[in-house]
Image 1 (cartoon, helix red, strand yellow):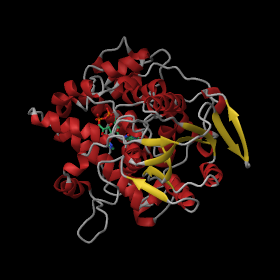
Image 2: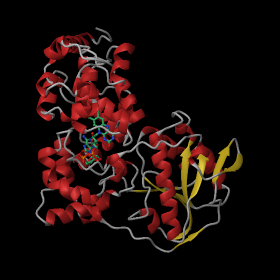
Image 3: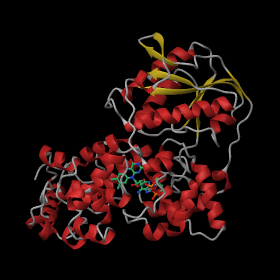
Image 4: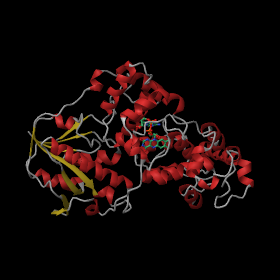
Length: 459
Ligand code: FAD
């Protein structure tokens, strides 16, 4: 059997099902021009992926293999490779709309062998008795727990594979049927290195071991480093989901309550499953015709972290500086965006998508739809987070806010959490709150009700 092993969301050799397939192999990674050409020249995510691809290449070399790195449109690349007489392409499932359309086209060129790797459960594994997808998380979670078995912990060990000859020393560029080679460097792809210090790059299981006992109690407090920070590694499969699960099983045997953390991993699975069955959720509301009100000025202030609402600005500035934002703050920002500012959730989803290193279409889209109240199993539209109370509860000392909004460092936490105070003070270089929460929430409610009864697009 002559196979292409296509690495995508599984940039590792440890416990990788691709390496358990016997025969002659061509390990491959593609820098996809359909995606890359839309990105800015200095993109943190591309720098990260390039680094991981180079690590993967050297790990494969230490197994006696190598990694061919291609640059171009995947469909064109496979048309080219197909001429070399492969039997199949093997890859782990990738389920967002773009990936599925791309894989469908490629499976018309070469037989496609899909392997399950990215999630605990394949997106179509947890179904109701009538074989339809769950639309509510809790029953999905209960079913997931009852189906979870040793099979989900399987450890794939590499088998003997024979490396096929290919261009391994350079990047192979394929465009309009012309094949050329480029130096093995990020710059060959048209990008400059982004070297911002990113704490989440170092997240690992031994750090998680210390956090697990406090996770349930402290995970909502953005100033405390109580969450795993593993979303980026999970996104690109640098850490395999089964390795993480085996680690959780070990911790559980030691008496640690691992359930709250496991639940979040199942949440990730739930969202993947919803997007798998309802790909139109990427742009379309599941319920209610709320379209938001397009307002460029409001959008820009939000994206710059200059709304005058400290917890929102802190979150956005954390995102811009590090490519990551704490989950509680993501929820507060998305609620403020869709309800207080009444902006279209799709704009916020896209903005997060541009900046989040851990960007995952399913988690991001479904979380935005949840916040907007438009998704499947959403936050009810009439439940509107009060960002001032949220900040007071989850960032009591305003330590997180002061870390990211230095203009407020001389103020007390009490002043920072007091909307009236922030509306009346003049703070050097910091704007006054752009909306008054109570009024904005009232306006949002009226807008939502009007949309439901009349199906109107604008208030
Ligand atoms: P932990 O709390 O340590 O959780 C462990 C893992 O579980 C995470 O790494 C992640 O893979 C998964 N997870 C945790 N919470 C959620 C959740 N609510 N939904 C789905 N999976 C979860 N997560 C992404 O991975 N990519 C995104 O693009 C993304 N966009 C989001 C947008 C919004 C508006 C919101 C509210 C949440 C979004 N999330 C997204 C979910 C969550 O915020 C991040 O997964 C989490 O903050 C990552 O930090 P962590 O690894 O320390 O999480």
